[in-house]
Image (cartoon, rainbow, N blue to C red; front, side, top):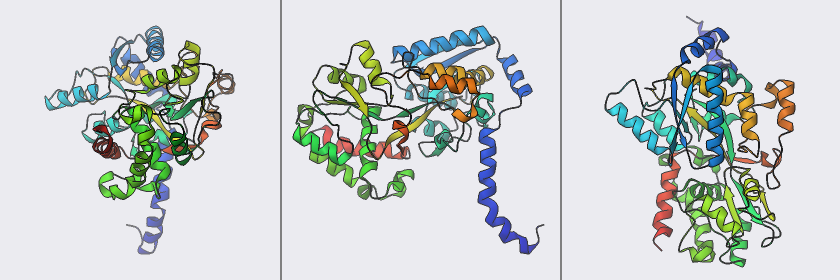
Amino acid sequence: MLPAILRPFIVSLAPLLIALCLTAISSAPLRAESFAEVTRLARGQTVYFNAWGGSPSINAYIGWAGEQLKQRYGITLVHVKLTDTSEAVSRILAEKVAGKSSGGSVDLIWVNGENFASLKRDGLLRADDWAFGLPSFAYTDSKTLPAILSDFAVPTDGQESPWGRAQLVFAYDSRYAETPPRSAAALAKWIGANPGRFSYPQPPDFTGTSFLKQIALELAPDRSVFMMPAETADKDAALGPLWQWLETVHPDLWRGGTSYPANYTDMVQLLGDGELSFAMAFNPAEFSNGIASGVLPETVRSYIHQGGTLANVHFVAIPFNASASEAARVTADFLLSPEAQLRKARADIWGDPTVLAMHRLPQDMQKAFTRVVRGPATLSEAELGRTLPEPHPSWVAVIEEGWNRRFLLR
């Protein structure tokens, strides 16, 4: 037992010791010989990767990853294309309820936020901290990107591996808005002075709900309340500024607020058609891609608000009953590798920002990342550096229910 005189000293050091342990975990890769065994067992396995299938460029990237995995590791990657991640979450839950503890239909799932919180809460994920043991995890740094360890304020505990970064980015057409409004207050003034030229996707569309979270965070007297579960907060006080802002702009929205774009793709098309002056997306390269494909005019540029915009990390996770657990881990490690992350960052491939820390990479890879060509409407890493943390997932339902009650049936 510790001498009584030392106990207060040890107790005072406990938070520091825990933090040091977490730092060590977040950067310590699985021993090479151990992962070599995982790779050996993975050969010949088929990974059913459940991931959103709504983007041709993302689908093509996943196809390329499948080709590489087949050539290098003998792994077959099958992209199960989802329209909503909740489809796969529901399937995994149904399998658990049915007692199917192995041989599951999902081996790897692209996930973050509310869906991850549900999977973790219901015990639907591989329970160990497997992600911390991936060799490629050593190229990340939780000090420079804390979100790789906390998904929408929920600790990952190594149950999902980071894949890419996302940040809410606004776009404007300079033909209609010479200087874009760079705050919620300035945006409200612009909408009032230019009726019918602004809208946002209808919640529960992800981008639409994200826009509401952005405004809520900007106007909140105390943002920390959104980092805690909604049931612990005074929800009316926290969201009051958001509802007041929406009431102010609602009459001057596109079509008088009687209808909304279905999703960000529809909104980008409306920007391209000249019906809207603004759009928003979670992929910083979205608007450069739109210009390249001819959907958007060359007068479109992107920007973020002065106080920052909502940012998060997206991940891949392994269900508790995956049929090809070893191959799923090898796949996750490859998706996190510098080679795969570099290709994903290219605007002509996907344009998804990397989760890797440049100072952790070999010199040649650091230089390769600096040479990645950005499109004409893609902000630099420095410009994207101002971010706001995602609220706890429990706020999504509260915000969407409140919005439906106030605005959907008008």
